[in-house]
Image 1 (spheres, rainbow, N blue to C red):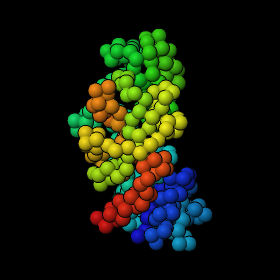
Image 2 (spheres, rainbow, N blue to C red):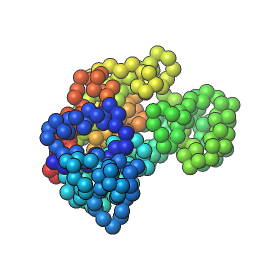
Image 3 (tube, rainbow, N blue to C red):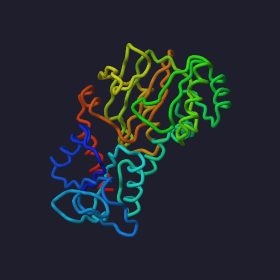
Image 4 (cartoon, rainbow, N blue to C red):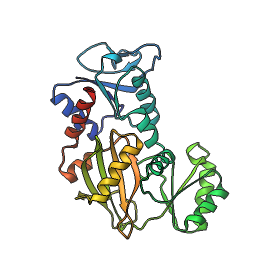
Length: 303
């Protein structure tokens, strides 16, 4: 099959996926959104050196028609570039993993929270506010400590735990001074005592493919990028069901669902990722995630 691979920077995750695709004999056309531009009136993609519509590579062809792609995968680091390129490809009938709708919901924490709430998926109690004053009121309603997150972002950047009103006032003032769109929205969640651990669950085709536990003895942030230890884990029935329901709620595809547990053992979904980073998941779980991902792409190409 001919695969469009939207990616401006090849990390280990992308390298593993590219090797798997090419190892199965598929033709990969790597689309670099930084090169050229999107021509809305033509479905053609020029190669990386062509300087034209959109950068691709594969089989030495100078031009690849979008309409000839069997499937595409979005592995673009820039959320805006990935989102618009996905929408462009879909406008010509190309199936993209993940879809524009799934990506749009997952890249915005407010959208994600609303989708999960509408689907009845349990999540930490959440408040959204638009001014410092209303954000402080929301924090008081939730009760300190509270967690503040940027509505758009990843890798635990700009994530904070506010232990009291004084800390909240300082952080909210900083957000106001920063002034960008993301900082004009105050996204607050209750702090859940999760024991320094949570689970990252890969869901594809409404099934759990792989899972790992992330744990830390230093602080409360469990991201692998922040140094958390990752190990294999056997999910209980409730956690597995919560992950699958969360994946369906945001639109499906291949997603990473982050689940933590209350002191009583109740699973709470606190994140859904549409561009799943899976090198740590592969190492911890022993599952060949790139192979599972490629299986999903092959299935999508046949639909």
